[in-house]
Length: 320
Image 1 (cartoon, rainbow, N blue to C red):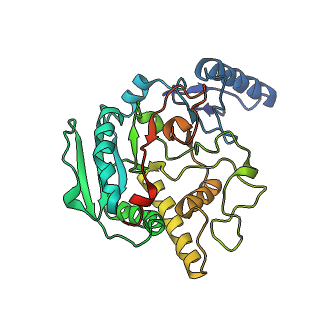
Image 2 (cartoon, rainbow, N blue to C red):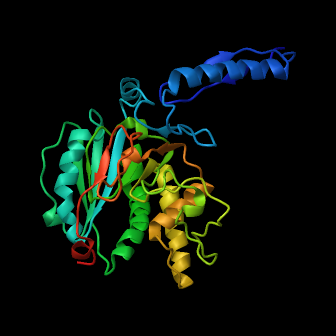
Image 3 (cartoon, rainbow, N blue to C red):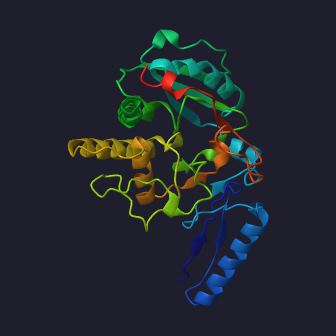
C-alpha cells in the first residue's frame, strides 16, 4: 500500500499547494531533494526583495513592498470582514477624524470593515463618509487618570469585547493607535492568525538594544539572551480568537504585576513583546506599517510609508 506525502507551501503569493506522491521506498534524500527544489523555486519567484529580511527564523513572512500581490490576496479574502479597534480617550479624540478619513482612503479598500471606536466622549466622534460595507461602531468606555493606565487597559477592553461581540461580528482584528494617519495602501496582505509589527526604532538593532522589560519580577520579563524582534504596541492583530488569547494573557500578566507593585517599563507594549516571544506570530509587518517621520530618517529600503505618526504635543494631550 502506498503512503502519500502532502506538501502545502504557504506564502502571500501562493493560494494553492503541490501534492507529491511518494512510496515507502522513497529515500529521505529524494524527499529532501524534492523539497529543496520546491523551496528554491519559491525563493526565486516569490521573494524579490534582496535588500531586506523577508522571513523570520520560524518561516513567517515579513511583509514589505514588493513581497505580495494585492490582486491575488484581495480575491482570496473577498468575503472577509475586518474589525479595526482604536482608542480615542480624553483629548486623543481630536486625532479621530484624520485617522478615519485616511483609513477610508487606504485601509482595506474594497473589503468589509467595522471601525470599533473606544471612547469616553462619544458625542465628539466625527461623522465621516464611509464606503459601502463599512461602519463605525462607538463603544462608550470609561477613562483613567494616567495615560499609562489607559494604554494598559486597552488589552482588557479588547479582550472583553472580543468575547462579547467581536467573535460574532468580524473575522480579523487590527489593533491600532489613534494618533496616526494612513498614507498608503494597507490591505489584506497583513492578515494572518497572529501578526505583529517591527518597531521603527529597533528594526535594524540587535536584541541587546531592545527595550524589553528586564526585571525578573515582572511577567513581561525577557532575559538579555532571548528575543526575536522588538514589536510596536501600536499595530498588531490577527484572527479574533488569537487576539482574544493575546489580549487576555497580557491583561492577566499586567494584573499580576500590579499585585506585585511593579509596572513594566513600556506598559502594554512590554507585555505584547513577552507574549509574541512565546507565541510566534505567523506574519510580521515591516516598519512600512508604522513610522515616525519626525523621529526617524527614512532609509532607502522603505519604499512606502503606509501608516505614520501625526505631530503632537504629548504634554498637551496626555492626562487631559
